[in-house]
Amino acid sequence: MTPTGSTNLATRVVDWLRAGYPGGVPRQDYVVLLGLLRRKLTDEEVHGIAAELAGLAGQGEVITVADVERLVNEATLDEPAAADVARVSSHLAAGGWPLADHPQA
Image 1: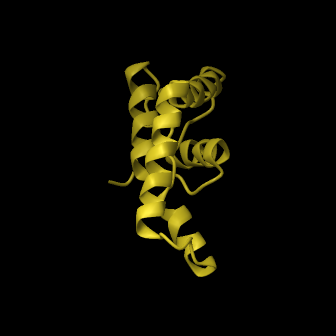
Image 2: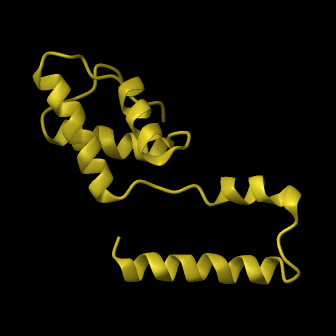
């Protein structure tokens, strides 16, 4: 994502929050809002995670969904989204490194 794209996204999020909470966000709503704003992996992050996993596979390691989920978790500091796990898995498979198991749909 470009800096402009990041700024536009941030502006849209702030505008959305201001419209929904004109008097400010109540403390008890912070956790819920953060859950709604869960971030997705960028294409660069997908490529980086897939490259790391492919490197492990090249050393003879068996790559599993749990491995993908662990690296997504480390990259985002959040529970891995199924869509992100699927994107990384697809990228690996396209490069000739399919997972030993399949992501849950």
